Length: 496
Image (cartoon, rainbow, N blue to C red):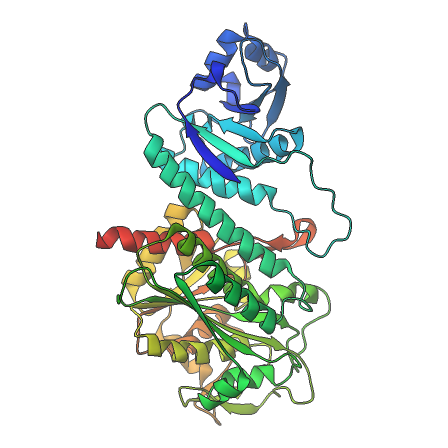
């Protein structure tokens, strides 16, 4: 979806549809007041007869309103005047996008930037509009045989402003790039495991390298990983007929500056191995590569924005299957770092592939390393689907990610990474066990990874609760692409 910024007055706006805000108790936004005046109180009559309450996300679509050149006018409820929350605003944008898309309008101009969202400025609203509208219109179709595309889909969205054109254009541009990155992450994540294999992911990374001159892609096969001593990662792929891949996407935007390395867990399907998962819900284990998908989306977004920063995406990718050569509970493997690992639960495989990828990241002399993984079900119990779990070996980095989460409204919540928890990973037969018991599962998983991050500043994002939705609206969310891009944007701003 393209974007534009306009200063043209509402009455003479020539878009296929113009969008204005209505608040609870019949309060009108400035543009809604103008619309009401030129239309001989048409909006007031709609409110008076109870057709519009102003509740966030409520809509009324009007055609051929007197005094307006645009053929359609969409009234959108935005909650309480001057007290609209981020959730209210997102609900309004979601409803707006869906109604316009289904109305036959090809372009629309939004006047919802007039809405006062608590603590948010016009640039945030413009960027969030692009992200939320694109998310609302995303529809998975790749493996469906009967898809009827709309004759006139919404493909251009405008923003009205009186004097803030350049800032809103920049914000919309950023939002558009983030939205495209999220769509890429969704599409990769939603693909079934028989299509989106480690080799498929590797091919997608090659395509990104071909699309952007600033991105160089490198793919390591199993023989090359074996030469590096990645016994932990390769122990997981042994149980699968699909060969593992280690994918590196190197985005160069800042000369020889030390990079930020993003390590994304790429389990394209996780059956649990010998520690087999229950059948119910196992189909959702195609989403165990959402961490890698977020790295793909982030690299794509920053390359499109041509950001002045160096970022390297590292994706260890495998399946976890119960083959005759698969890991067995009690097996001991040796990681690239030389540490031996006792595998007590083969379904705790994500940390086994991540630990070798984290060790591999040392060669890039990183300034920061962040891993992103659908690592534990325990994080869903702790935080639900609202916030991503955050743990770090550096409080300044944790604070930066917390801020980026709040800035982008793709929020995180920090959990402890105290040495007190490390004893749960003690093993009588190896340097470390791969699970630490039923208590504090998300923390002990991060504690396991922390043993492989002692040489650099590192944070861990557990996205098991935020990467996809279950139930009727099952599908990938594209998170935490907004958080990661915002974190990188904040780093750039700090260094100016």
